[in-house]
Picture 1: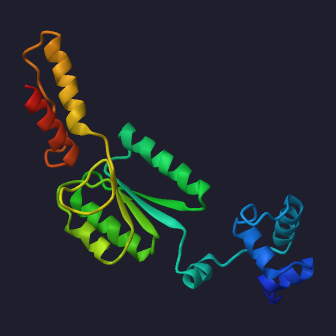
Picture 2: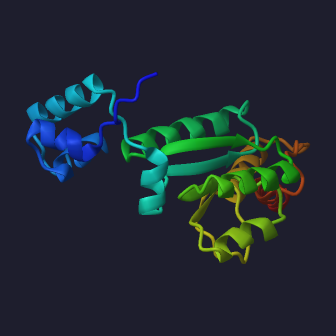
Length: 210
């Protein structure tokens, strides 16, 4: 059994002849932000690896009240549209020092509620949600708690939550009008999830064009 005392960040800094703040910034991925030289970064990382030093992420999260994680809820990871969104979100988050916890809600409102409860327990810093249906009370509850939320693709009328979405009404309208201009008359519409916002907007665009 190894009873050797665990090396602290203060010990590591002292061994290297550096300040604790410099070592902390290097190990927390903020060296470039504070213009710490590559040579110093390499020295710190090599010493940390040699001594088996690692930052206690949980303790750091509790101290800073920040976990550097974002929850991403999408309705169907097998749908190329949502898988591409997930990939782009993960890439953008990683560049900013964040990690993503991805939840596939399988177009099920109850799974969506359970996923949100799980992510709250994980104390994520914010949430990106592609809602399953028009039910929004559980999402409003998060807003009431002060949790940062942004909706993706789907949104709720009258609910003051930031969102990023396609113009489903205009897209459907222009698509159907093009077919009409080509001389087509019997134009069908295959629906998606009946009560989802994209479907309702596409149906509205189709109906107005027809």
